[in-house]
Length: 112
Length: 110
Image 1 (cartoon, rainbow over the protein chains, first blue to last red):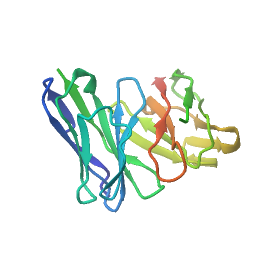
Image 2: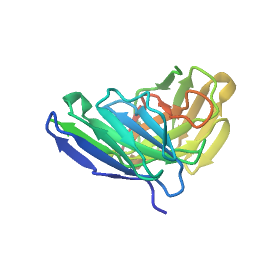
Image 3: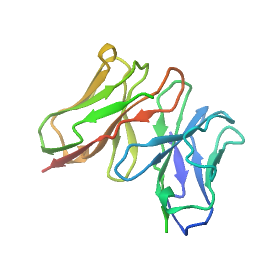
Image 4: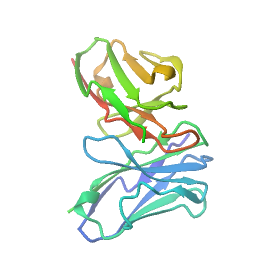
């Protein structure tokens, strides 16, 4: 079956530009997570949805980061006015409640 | 919050050798996952192992929850085993995000 998919796989943005990253979870998975992975580090939590409800956004680094999942399936992570420190790999994962998390391939964002 | 420490940070193996990777965590957990991140960045699930021992081919994992550690064993390593191995635990019970260690970077040379 299809796994978690993310698009685009690569994104180059000029500093100050807005970007939108998409995540398509595994069908039927109610939980969806976004993580940020800096070079040479482990993934770090950004935000978490159960269905369409955003239950935890404590990991979002600033108010320039915004995530939504309006119909409880596809999710979009938006970064406004990108900065160089936003350059990272953005990973999406999905799961059943309390289940194993499955990760997508990530979006590599480079802000110039 | 919960701390996750992995060792060693780097490991170089000759093809065919065996290895043990360790993950220590600072608080009791009800979930632990091991992942392999391949050179293309994809995180691949290896084990969901809150306690006990599981085996999958050349890989096996053991978690001793009461002593707050988990071990990942790789036997007869192959070059395709190269990459970064992460363990991850939730910070509390329930369906919560994972806290990752910094990983062990494994290089298997022919």
